[in-house]
Length: 337
Image (cartoon, rainbow, N blue to C red; front, side, top):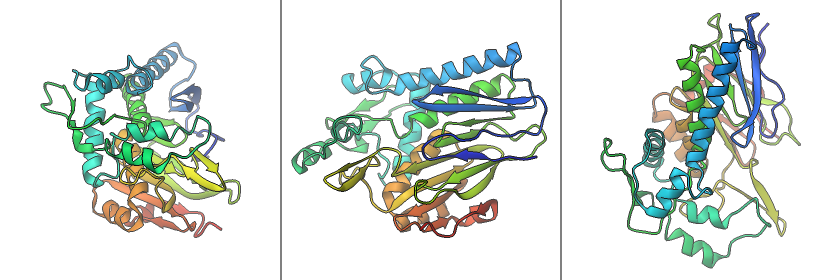
């Protein structure tokens, strides 16, 4: 009997049911959330599986630490401070993917928003940055300030401004990619990784069936249940939503998805879910960029981009599904009330 994996917008309720008797799910706290790995067709408790799972989670932790701007000795912290260093292949790949999404999104996804995110600290006492501070920080948000240079050199530079990198919009996807890569190298192709807002299918179930992924309502307290169910055999799904980190100040609600052009939380969407055959890092970054672009531009970009589909829930609760995804989705709700 097939069950459904849920991308939930606050907590993980259910892991996957699998078709094989030798299967199971390992759940651990990682990447600042609960991450589950479901392996189909192989015994979860065997020594070989345990060893691979340990290695996979450790590899994801290494990527997470490398991209953490709050750690001065992380690779990203050193790059922000030194303005140019030779970086690892992993960080180089993340920066290339981020630059690709920066280009295709017209700057809606921008890794040089570090000065802005320093002002909007949702984990600190709740306050809204002044217009003066926002204007000052915006002077240092410039995606073109990140210059990658030659691939063989792997020596990116921050030029022309006091730009500061913040890779929070791509880090979880990059860590999941690394986790998936480690599992695949050890022969666990029939597995799926669920990190709440990001999912990656390393491959289908052992019997060839796809995983079923449920996308929950971005307003689960008022409109519970799924808005869609997607079949996924290989690829990634990422959801960016205005509910993930938010605060209310003086009766007004602010969320963490910032428009790099205005410095303010981007209006237009409750959530954006990207479904792609590309990497989880790409899906992670693109879902953020689309959430900033606005519905018309975002939908136009998705429709013309190969191997990318999306589900949008706008500020009024209306659901929009890209053309190439409509036949792959079991739609649960036409409109959120």
